[in-house]
Length: 90
Image (cartoon, rainbow, N blue to C red; front, top):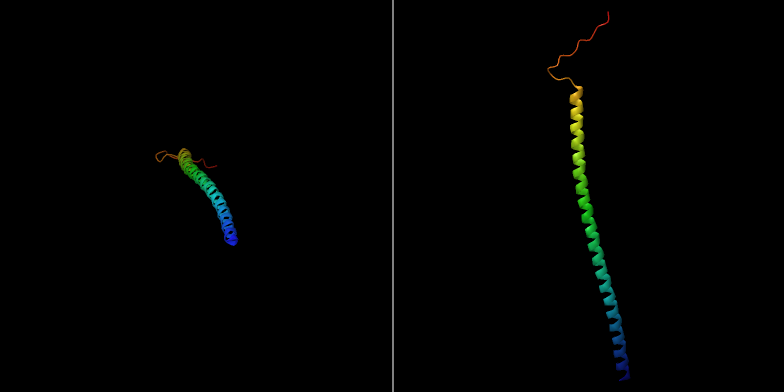
């Protein structure tokens, strides 16, 4: 009878230890889920920043192209403008 009572006490201790472990793991799991959610939020923010950066980059490229075309147009004679004759040395 004493042996059965000892086994029961041992099993109760083991159950209590396992319960503590489980509760600790549940808390750790909750913290990990919160951390994961926070990390996912940061990833979404970074993705949005990258999209914004890509839009700005495309706009800058378009403006550079327009400026280059304007500069090129300013430096080339108009099609109906006659070229000035070059003086030949005597």
